[in-house]
Image 1 (cartoon, rainbow, N blue to C red):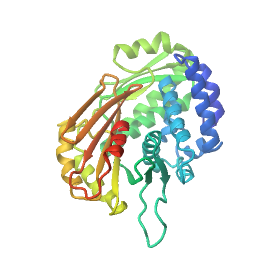
Image 2: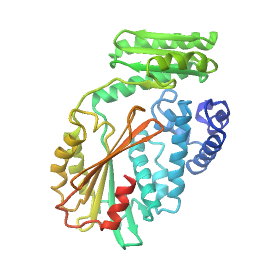
Image 3: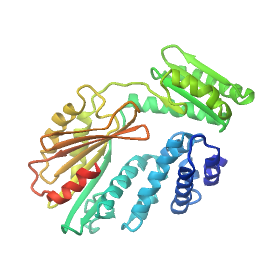
Image 4: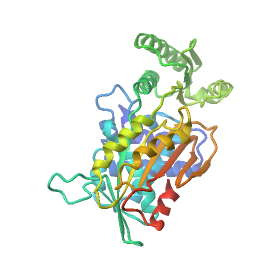
Length: 381
């Protein structure tokens, strides 16, 4: 299948609208670099066991023909370039095709690259002498300026079942559309996650609409009251048809959003800290970074996360810093930084993606990062 070949996506850059020349060059350079370091067969390995393209994050990015997706690819390639000389990086690269490991490894790569830019030297697992069943932190960081060594453990908090069901439903929609033709574009919003039977019925209707859109070079709609609103069209008709329909509904003209799911993730965050601290050596200053995509969206927001998660962090005197990192799509947010005691929260906007970082400092830790080294973490998270 040509979609699982790097050349298809490199050549496809010329067909993307709204993409400036320098950005196209950067995206092409990034794709060529990823092909070189990850291998010609990387995309095929990402697609093994899955119908078509939808679930692996790299394939999902490539299936999104918005320029922002290629900028995301370029940033990821840039992180790998930054880490080229880091010890044991190849161990991480070798498993990037693994869907079950990718979110963890992507956060590890992103975190390490930011800190290497700040002058630290990174080594990936194994980060300590192998033997006597020694637990291995994900990342060892050496600061030549202060002669400090800090170990960092990365973890991902899997979405709750309702979020997984919603993600799987969206993946099924992407499969249905692009299984008909890669020349299609669509915009959609879930109002709620359908049952399996309702989803099967919707997918049949989506496939029929996709066939009509590609054959007639028109726009077709799928509406299910209270569940889904969607439009699909041939890529050539996007600017004149799909963009207008999307703008009227506050949607991006590429992809699917929703549904809104309310929940409380702090208990699961506390359990994750409890589990991950076992990986870290007792006589070093240590850092835990946890990917919790929606941690700040629930009732109470950031103050609730600080109050509840801090209670867990202070239990472990070998953990000086815990970082909760979250990302979600919302171009209505604004950048923001706030300090509560020694804890700091930062919200950044990158191409419509909202990135949140909450840094929780443990005042009861025995081993502490120096002010100079701590400042580097504050700059990049």
